[in-house]
Every structure is written in structure tokens, then in C-alpha cells.
Amino acid sequence: MDIIDLIPDNTSAIEQAAALLVEGFAENSPASWPNLESGLEEVREWLGPEHICRVAVSEQGAVLGWIAANSQYDGNVWELHPLVVRADRRGEGIGRALVHDLEQRVGERGGITLTLGSDDENNLTSLAGIDLYPNLLQHIAGIRNLGRHPYSFYEKVGFQIVGVLPDANGFGKPDILMAKRVATPVSPEGRQ
Image: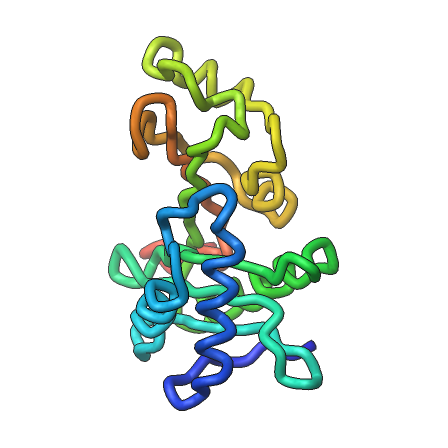
């Protein structure tokens, strides 16, 4: 497996990445990319030089996974969005490799922090289906994964929950905000 830049003239890889989006989000977020055209539109939006857009490909050139990120806070923070791995290849370390590769690319561009939001629209965590506002921090501290929610994967690759946006997708459907440091920050005085 190789991880390479996804570039505008690689139409086959773009189409495969778009199909992965549709397939990968069909169960837990079907409205995100309901068809190939919406997937293609999303992939094409990430192809500019201001973004990081990478694919994991097999020796035969099949796209196994796709990851992208955009710069925020003057380049100090990059948002990972989206990450998707072919369903029949999950659990093989492809997602982990894509995240690690993205961390390197973010660091090369001067980024310090990588962040993401991981929605829970289907009651896959203990944060869903309830009013989080009373005792919000207590709910976050006691989070449990009830159904293979991706936040556990992100914790395994070093992300931490840094907050929750209650009701982001409707009542009881929060967005779990996660982040990790990817580079050692240098203070204004030049100390690390």
C-alpha cells in the first residue's frame, strides 16, 4: 500500500474516493453523500493546493482509503475531514496509516494541532439521545461507545475529546470534538 496525493487528473482515484464516501457513510450518515454525484462534488472540493488530500492505494491502484484536511487558525490547526476506508479493508491499519501520514503533512506545513468532529446521529455513544446541557462535563467524562462509534478509533490514534457540541445535528445528536498535537509548539521566546 502507498499513500499518495489525490490530484485533479487522477479521475479513476477521484471516482473511487467518491464511491468510498457514499459507501462509508451510508449507514450512519446517509444524507451526507447519498449518491456518487454528491461524493464526486465533495472530493473535488478538496483537490486545491490549500488542502491536504491523500489516498491509500493498493499495488494495483485501487483506492483503499481517503483522507483530507483544511487549514484553520492561520495554519496552526488543521481539520481532518473526512476519513473513509473501504468496508472490506477496515481493521487492517489503513485508517491509522492515513492519519499518521496526514499528521506528517500537517507538520510539514507548520501545523501544530489536528482536529475533527465526529457526529453521533444514531445513538452510538452515551452522549446521544439525551439533553447534555445539565452536567455537560460529567457526560463527556463518562462517555461510552455503545455501537462502534469512530471516536474510539480516533482515541487509539492519539486524539482526545476536547468538547462536544450538543444538538449539532438535532436534539440529542451531538458532534464530538477531538484534537491532538502533531508538532511541538515553539514559544515566542524560542523555547519548546
